[in-house]
Amino acid sequence: MPHIIIDYSRGAAERVAIDEVTRAVHYRVRDGGLVKPTAVRTFAREATFSCVGDEHPDNHFIQIIVRMAPGRPAETKRELLKAVLEAARDVAAPALQAGRLGLRADLYESDPNFAFQEIAFV
Image 1 (cartoon, rainbow, N blue to C red):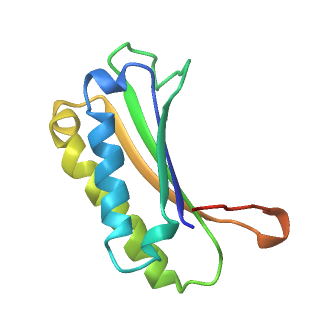
Image 2 (cartoon, helix red, strand yellow):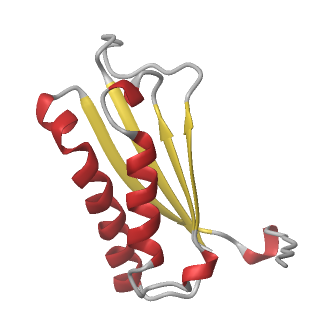
């Protein structure tokens, strides 16, 4: 862990290169020294349907969720989340400057009592 989920409104990819956002966020977390590099998982998914604000067709959002195991100090979690937002902002800057785009990052701790997994790498 962490697992990073990038959700974005339908059509946002027309204004922001989501593949670049995904790679930028992944690399920043993987190479940032705050987590085990081999544990980072990042994916993006477009909302099939979304409503943003007053539902103007030019309104879009990118929501980044970082889910990780508990136990890290608050400052480390803040550093990680700031790095995620900065990496995404670097790519999305032109669209943010043009307006009608929301960018947000949140961090959630996974409860190990309610998370099960199996991992098999060769």
